Structures are given as C-alpha cells and as structure tokens.
Length: 192
Figure 1: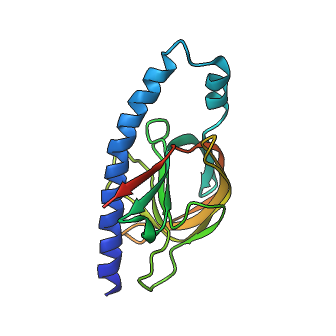
Figure 2: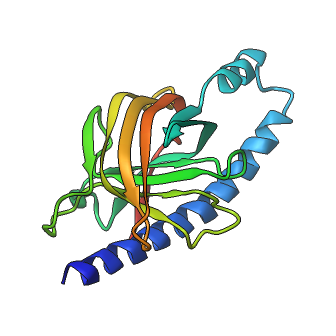
C-alpha cells in the first residue's frame, strides 16, 4: 500500500511539475518582453537582479541558482487550501529542486516521514534536470521554513534542509538552503 501511495504521489508531482513548467514558460516569455520595455524602471530591473536567489548545499557542495517558479495554487476549489510551489531554475543550474508546500503562509512545512494519507508537503531534487529528469530524489525528511511572504511586492524569503532518496536507494543531504527575495508570482493558480 505504501508503494502505491508513493507511486501516486510521484505521478501527481510529475503532473504538477509539468503544468507549472508550461505555465511558467509562458510567464517567462512575458517577463522577457517586459525587460525589453523601455517603460520598465531601472530600479525594478535592479531589484530583480538583486533578488530571486536560491542557495543550498548538496552533500556539502554549494549550489547557487534562482527561482524559476514560485507561485501559490489550489488543487480543486479554494476550500482545499492554498499551496505554494517553489522550483529552482533548471536553465541556470542543472541541480534543481521542486517542492509543493501545503500552505502559503509564513511557517515551517515538513516533508516526508509521514505514512498517513493527509495532504502534506512533498518535493523532489534532480541532480541533472535537463539531462536525466528520470533520476529524481524524493524528500524522505526535511523542512522548508518560510519566514516572509509579501504578496503585494511578490517576495518570498525562507530556509530549507532535507534528505532525498532515489529509487535505487541512494541518498543525498541538502543543507543550508536559503530563499533570498524569491520572486513570487502574483495571483493564485487553480488546478482542477
């Protein structure tokens, strides 16, 4: 039963990642066009360049990247709660993280380690997202601490750590994770 549940969670994670990837690619094109718009202020460009950083260590090796998608979403109707997706930029750095947190407010969100069926935060780490997306490591334990969510200015700050494991049984330690002025997309996406 645990393997079936794990398989269902993995399948749902893939569908959500794919959906967010498609939406984010469209959003990315709009952002690129905004950067070419002369009406975009220099302060806004500087603010974007200084923020949206995500750093962490994988078995002690530092990874510096940016947020590719940081957004809030619901699965079904709003009564199911607002969740948050944080995906690092696999175009800047092949080592990528994708997590879905079971809330979108400041607080601590634990990943893995719970065998019951209640909705909980979950996520994956990819050592080479573009080169071998099938080699994903699921969080078996860990936590994301969101210290700030500013929906008006589109900013998320926080920290994270975790142990991830792939289907071969290999494990990796993610430590000293930081989200520094991550760029939160405006609005809430609704998935049915």
